[in-house]
Image (cartoon, rainbow, N blue to C red; front, top):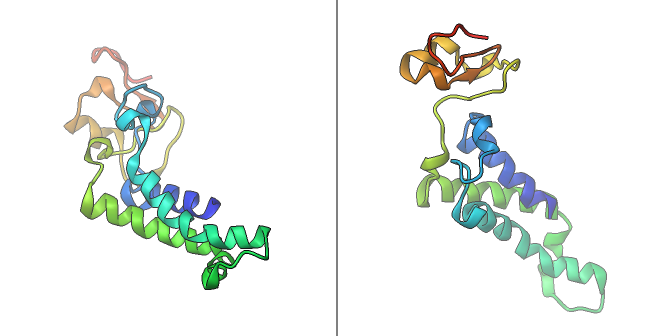
Length: 151
């Protein structure tokens, strides 16, 4: 169960979003990370695709008398199997079938005091393309009133 969950999370953060999240939107109800009725169907589908094939082996591990054929063998490496299937299925769904374009951001919006130079975004780069009053990146937070200096 943990393999498909980890695979979905890792794929979403590193492969789909490329480590770029808007931290402020994570805590907004009905923000950009709010999906249909609050459920990300892409993540749910990839989790099920990684988890369901291991269920016969799980049942066999509880009750040895159950005849599940060779399906119990998948359960011996369930974490790796679930992780791999979840990563591949989530990547395929999000890249080719139904990209989550409404929740992808061009730059990472980090909480004040946190800097990640590997994301390659500076306040000056972002301020030239976006509303200055709406940016909170790294060590500086730009005030809501554009006349105020950065805090």
